[in-house]
Image (cartoon, rainbow, N blue to C red):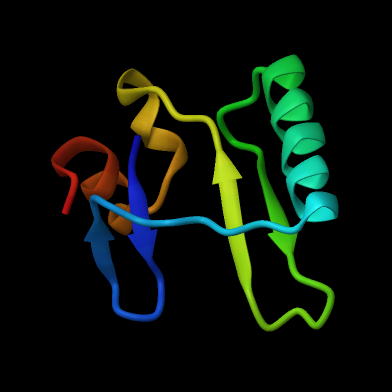
Length: 80
């Protein structure tokens, strides 16, 4: 698992994710889509109703980092 704080360009290791029921259902559905597609180049976004808060989910494989930009490679491989 890797978590990137896009606003501060920093890896995080401990977060709390608070979701409303409809947001949790959306995340659940999107994870199903990601798992079914098995596409390491795909990502999905979950937003709140006002689009003020967002997180992005994706699948990754340390052996396939050529799919990502340099920042994401550093996050995946070095967790920084």
